Image 1: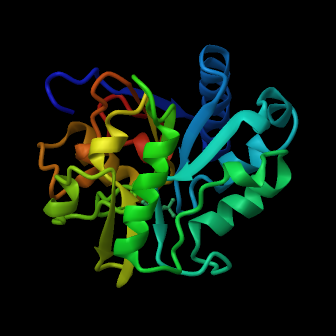
Image 2: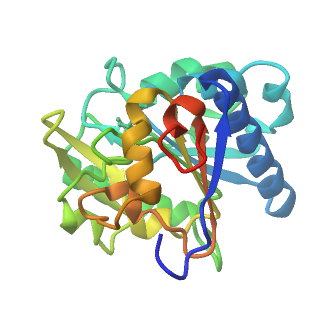
Length: 250
Ligand code: 6PG
């Protein structure tokens, strides 16, 4: 975190299910605040596997009824450059686990078109977000992020300094690990959000969680360290397995 950013809040829950429930409750609370103050809620969903259970919990009682889905706008933190029906698609996972199960208008689902040219799609998506985020003080209400074992988040991968430092809101990014083009929100947009929530559970994330939160700062090598909301909230929702190496994490 940079010197000026508010400190991160770190929540440690006994297991992954309780961590997912805590994340779902935080989503509902963020939506309630935004809908009450502005009448709409714009959330960027994380990809990967971790948030699936969170999305399933949001799509089932009691939480499904606690959000006015008709006034929710959904975008993504990143997407793999694959078709929307690919098993690798972040859109497909969210569509199956949540979006197809709540009364969210189709026009409110803003899919990153992974099937397109990454450079052109990044440009299109940024224009879309600039239309959604018009007016003074407009910003993403909530950004959900995962954490890769190499320290990446969204598709901000180690060493990709041009993407990390981009003045754009959306950028194409190549992931060497998956040998795949991606489209990603950049730190510039993410750090302007009202609330950013990292989701990390499982022992395989523990070492990287500790490095991000308590290790030396090396944000271009550990891109999750690039995430430092200017004045928004930064929250880590962990299970005990992912928090064990943290000072007092057990
Ligand atoms: C993606 C994600 C990526 C993910 C992490 C964690 O498209 O893969 O955006 O940043 O959140 O790699 O992935 P898991 O949740 O599957 O561990």
